[in-house]
Length: 453
Image 1 (cartoon, rainbow, N blue to C red):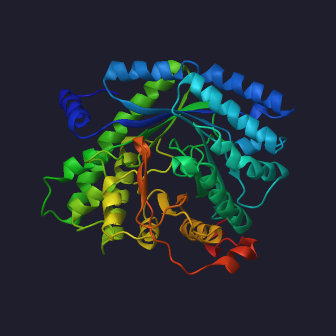
Image 2 (image 1 turned 90 degrees about the vertical axis):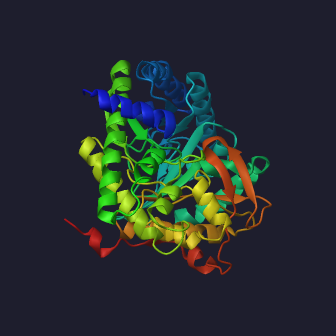
């Protein structure tokens, strides 16, 4: 991959003034061969295998950073869903496994380890039930371990029993981490149609169809897109989409180069580039700011969903032009706490939970890092999850929920988690209940459109 002098100078400018970085380089490791035996044996094999592949990971990523002068904001590990290779463990064994994963992640020096996960879109195995029993304690007692639960697919429908359990579990996890503002919930994602190669936390895991070990890259770039659109006042929306597409092409090309270099140095496969626009709490690095630059007075106003659809589609097209290895989520993220523009919109009353749900129909993920009052009932949390998951199932797309009940706090109050997690303002929740609906349980059947064969 060769670069012209102008491309190099443009990249330097984007790095220095437009918040460009590689958001994450994530090393995916298959742990399928670690299954079997008691918890001690499983944990020993897991620690040995992760260390064998990842001991040099952070060092090599930093060498690539130094060689190219391009920052990699996060170095992460993803693993085979724990409920799969740990299927023979009991609840105590899963907690012990989470503690082992946390210790190994700290020793290696990665920011997070994802994949303490389960796939229950069609029902529960005995291992899944033990995993669910352990999940709140596992996340509350570890720092780097992240979890996800896939509760639905377009072809299987929606497991409402799992969603009902998760509403209660999320409330429990918030209470267990009350002293830190319920931060444990920031490490748990509920998915529909979860991808196997997503490099972003908290939802990352290394799918069973993936290679033995692979590097996946998540790029950033809201600041770069915003800078590209700033001089575009007055141009029509089709022309504006072309500007976004060309900008996404440049960002993706850079991300693939960095990912391939890290993979080469580790001697493992290169996987994918996730071309999602991922905001940070830094000023000027906001997806909401881009929407407002397009012409929305405040994110959440009429026209917001259409503007976000334009942005997401242009990002996907630009990424697809730059590489044949796109994957993961790829689009635009709208996490509330991690985006200063989203926080501002919530505080000013422009952005509601219902409008966020509508926006999620056209972007990468869903209701991400959304805080709600601490007294929100567990059944209401389950209902919010079910609504978002249904959007993914009906529309053949990935959707997800990362919801944060803030213990002891009311709508309008907030918690500042610091770092990339940012500040989470509690959003008002519809006071009417859905207890009976959630309590029915069972599985919502897949849509007729899923019968494609």
